[in-house]
Image (cartoon, rainbow, N blue to C red; front, side, top):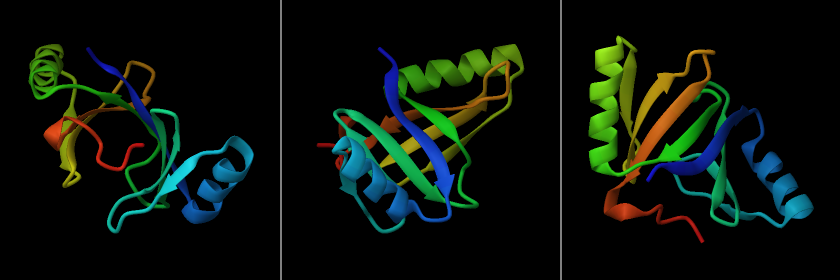
Length: 116
């Protein structure tokens, strides 16, 4: 069943913003080369991308089968989408009717290895 995985934002100082979430909310900060700085609040992540990244979006965790079904539904509805390989996961990006970007993300191995 799909569920919220992360909220993503761009920042000129991802490390500084992550440190803010750590100080103010007790977030667990994880940095991995080639990936956004992550600030985890329980099981939910805040992905802090450098400016020029994928843009603000909401990540919804789905299985491989759910992502395939979503591709079929988007195609049938005439909604444009694209996929991006994150190495640890594959994300399917599309926009809702109000123009907000959604990422349906499937982690290889079933779970985000950075998550607490």
